[in-house]
Amino acid sequence: MRPRVVSDISLLNSVCSRLNRNLLFSSERRLNYGDDPDDPSYCDVPKPCRRKSERKPYVTPMKVLIRRARAEREARKVQPCRMLEEPPDNGLLVPELVEVARQVYQARQSLLCGLSELVKIIRVQRCRVCKEVHIGQVGHEIRTCTGPKSGFRNAMHVWGRGGVQDVVFFPKCYHLFDRVGKPRVVHDEKHVIPRIPAIAELCIQAGLDLEKYPTKRRTKPVYCIEGRIVDFEKVMDGDESARKLSCENDSSSAESLSILNKPVDDLRDLMEKKNFVENGRNCLEQLSDEERKTLRNLGIKTLNSWFEMTSGARRIMEKYTVNTCGYCPEVQVGPKGHKVRICKASKHQSRNGLHAWQEATIDDLVGPNYVWHVQDLNGPALNNDLKRYYGKAPAVVELCVHAGAPIPDEYRSMMRLDVVPPDRDEADLVT
Image 1: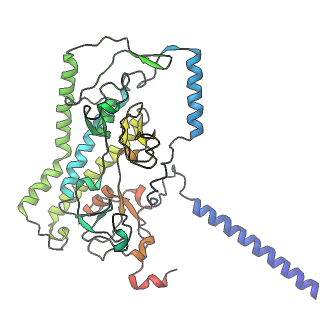
Image 2: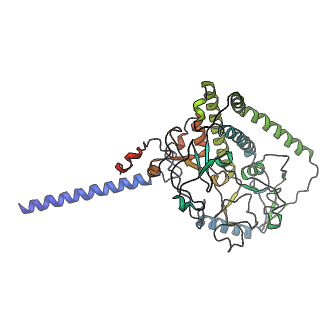
Image 3: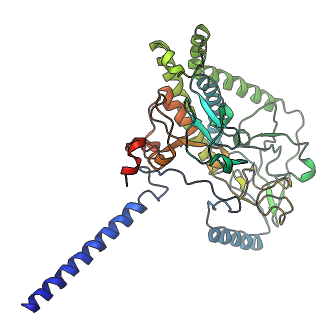
């Protein structure tokens, strides 16, 4: 009898160990699900802000960068003098990206016009002591404030009225007249060269012509002699054809922009007829059916402009280099970063105020500014004890969704629409 009991116990232990191993593997697969950035079906809530002493992760691994630099150095030794053939490194434009640059610029203008009208109806909250933003009638109660004296308030935010600049952030960079001949801006030129939004500078370098910000357009490629760029093209003064092209592009941009902003004008006319009182009530409740339809169309147009701008900027960034500082939000569009000593982030003393340049991402070029997702604008404020049940979304997406636009598929998992948060009195009952 005893050997049979021992055999049964050993069999039971083997089955349990096998079951635990399967559960462990399945849990690992479930935890790793969505870590792949190329997986379009899952996108988790963004991680909290990194420490100020930590550097941004590299887009391209360091080993690949070292291998690429070594190959370029070897090619330079074999052929010291060569003509650059691939645009835009040779100073020429990429033909298929010229129209994309114009569309991105028009989409940005349409986005700003739409947001300027949406923030008048849907309230945008911003903390007065930190950069936290919230879309809703009242601010949330999640204790994530990192501003001055936040410890005395238990990290509670101090909410105030926000605007368009809080919904989306466009960092500025120095405008380059010649992105190949003079790609760097030195420290003595920081007050001479104008600073414009980085996405506008990206569009200008990709082929957009703006009369206010001229740039040099080449017709012949440049040469690389022992690592230095040499341009043998003669400087042409008073190019009337370029000026005419700039005026034509500006007029076409204005016409297309007026077509895109038709819902904005309709909503503005309706708002002039009706005065909204901000006495704690949601302005959406005071809208009629016609005004709700106009607001929904404006939200859809604004959201489409956002996706058109970001997708087009990604395409341009595949060819045109954009650099960002590894420790601060500074961005510079061009082959190299500038040499202006204005960095005040971590370890800037060892760099003499210079930036630690590296490859930028779309989030560095256009700040999405993630906010907590609110399912009901008229509901209670988000509770700190239930923050793990709440999702997030870019402020532009959150604002347009509350205006009536359909929820984009790529943000459904991030907004956690399939999660039902418990009530406040049920927080202790949920494990």
